[in-house]
Image 1 (cartoon, rainbow, N blue to C red):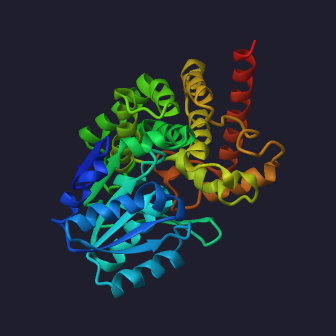
Image 2: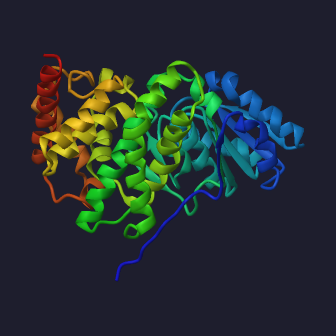
Image 3: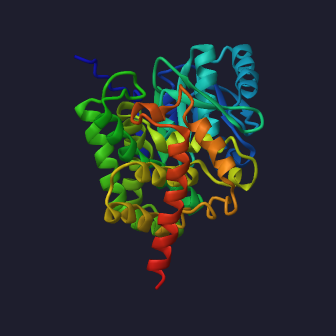
Length: 369
C-alpha cells in the first residue's frame, strides 16, 4: 500500500491587522531576523513589520528584493543573512519575494516567516519555491524539508491591494481541485511525495466550493477595500486551502502549461501567475472528458472576474502552432507535473490549447448574444 503524506505550515494566522501581533509570534523563533521586501512593499507593509519586531527587541536587517526569484538573488540575500547571523528569514510581499525568502531560509537553515501582501497565489504555505532565471524563465521547483514556520495574512492589507491580484489568486486556487482530482484518479503522487490523504482531498474540494460560493462577493469587497466575511473566506481559500490542497493533493497539467508559457517571449510575461494558470486550467479541462456545462461553469467565473480565457486574452492572438508546440514541449518534459495525471504527448497538449481557446471564444459569443 502506498504511503500517504500530508504537510502544512506550523502556524497560520489570518485577520484584519494581523501584523500588529507578528512580533509576539516571531520572538519565540529567534532574536535576529532578515526582512525581505521589494521597494513598493516596504511602504505597504515592510516598515510596519520591522516596527513590530523591534518592539519585541528582535534585531532586523532590511533587504531590498530585486524582483526575480532566481539563484543569483537567492544567493545574494543568503550571504547577507549569513553575515548577520540571522536565524529568522521573513518574506513580505508577493509570490516571488516569498519563494526567495523560503530559499534563503533553507540556505541558512533558519526559521521561515511569510507575510503575503496579496492573496494572488498559494505560495505562502508551501514547502517549495518556483525558481526562475534572471530573465524570468521558469527553471525548476526547489523543495524543502519543512513548510514555513509561520504565515501571517493581514486581510486589511489584502483588501487594499488591486482586485486583479485577488482574481489571480482565485484563478490559481481554482486549479487546486481540478489538478488534485486528476492526480487522485490517475493514482499519481502529490507534491508532498505520497498519495493524497483524505484530508488533502477534502481541503482541495472545499477550496473550489468556497471560491464558487464567495468569489464574486470577495471581488466586490476588494473593490471597496473592505474586509468582509466573504473576503476572509476567499483569502483563506486562495492562500491556505489552495496551498494545502495542491501540495498534499497534487499538481497536473494546469501548472505545467503555465510553466511552458515561460518558453515564449512577449507580452504574456506581463500577466500574473494566476492569469496564466486560468488558461492552463481550461487546457486541462479540454484534455479531460468533461461536459460543456462543467467547462462553461469555469469560463463564466473567470470572465466575471476579468480573467483571461482565450489566447488573445493572454497576449497570444496570432500565435503559431510552432510556438504553442514549444510551450507544449516545455510542459511535457520528464520532470513536469503533467505526468502525475496524464500519459500524454506534446502534440496532444497543442490540440488541447487550441481547443480550449475555441471553447472560450464560442462561450463568449453565446454569452454576448
